[in-house]
Image (cartoon, rainbow, N blue to C red; front, side, top):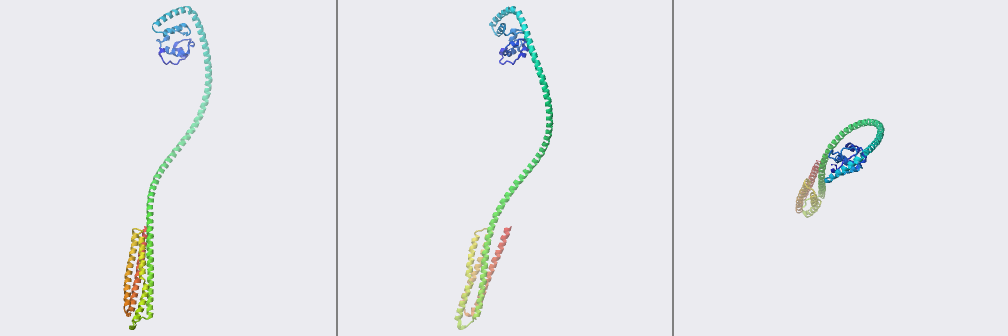
Amino acid sequence: MALEKRQLPEADREILYQLSGFIDIDKINPNAWPALVADLSTGEPGIIALAFGCTRLFQPSKPVTKAQAAVAIATGEASDLVSEELARIEAESVAENAVSAHNALVAEVEKDVNANFEKELSMEREKIDALEKMAEEAKRELERLRAEREEENMVLMKDRAAISAETEILSRLRREVEEQLESMINDKVEISYEKERISKLRKETEGETQEIVRLQHELEVERKALSMARAWAEDEAKRAREQAKALEEAREQWERRGVKVVVDNDLHEESVAGDTWVNVGKQVAVEGTISRGETLVGKLKTLASEVEGKSREFIDKIVQRIQYLISVLRKWASEAGAKAEELKDGAVLKARGSVQEMQQTTAGFSSAVKEGAKRVAGDCREGVEKLTQRFRT
């Protein structure tokens, strides 16, 4: 039943007319159209079909129509009573108003139909005219749109050709960029490898620089030691030469004095020989050489404490050579002192021979000093050459 439906369908005049066939649909309230459409859509069990049967006039303003509707809605015993009463009333009403109502209704319906038909016909004509105008405008618009579309198509074809060319160019550029990117990646890898290698080389260079600084320091220390040893050797050689020259002058002086062996003049000759021998002892000055050598040894040991390795060994060798020379000088000094004491206590007859022996001893001392100086200078040169070679390598 239509009343049991919670949602009613949408309805208009055409749908309701097709389902009911009522010719007085305009008299029915439009709000009731959805309910009528829902009820008529159910077929024979519907309220409209059971209450009104098959009719062309709904007549919603008639009391009988309302009564029929109330009967159709009613249920139980009351529905039977209402049905009987409505049947009686309807029979009486139909009998009285059948002809007049039918005629009036027919005339009214015809009038309404004609009016509606003319109205709808004029509306349809207006619609047709409007549609024709719209069709013409649409045709013209279509022609214009077609022309514009053709122009747009031409422009699109040109744009497509340009896009295709640009796409090809972009593809070529993309390949080139990819190649450049790959090359850049390879260059980046090479650069990272070079950075690592340069970092290693830098560390090695820093280590070598530190080693070079250390070697330079050791070389400077060795050079200083060599220069000190060389200066000492040259100074002592110069002193030895001066002492030899002084001895030679003393010998000539003794010969000019004519020192001879005379028995009665022993004391005088002895005193003369003593004075001459004292002068010779002053000229030799071996103790000064030893003192200066020991001072040099102390300085060289101080320099040796500042370095390590081969430089210390080299300076130690120089120190050993100088110490050996000092020991030799001390030995010769002690022997010369003993011989001097023997000459003082001996006879004048041995004075000339003692002077000659002293000259030989002094000459030996001078040659020893020269030999030691040469040896130290040779060791210095050899050490310098070794240091230079090591520094170069």
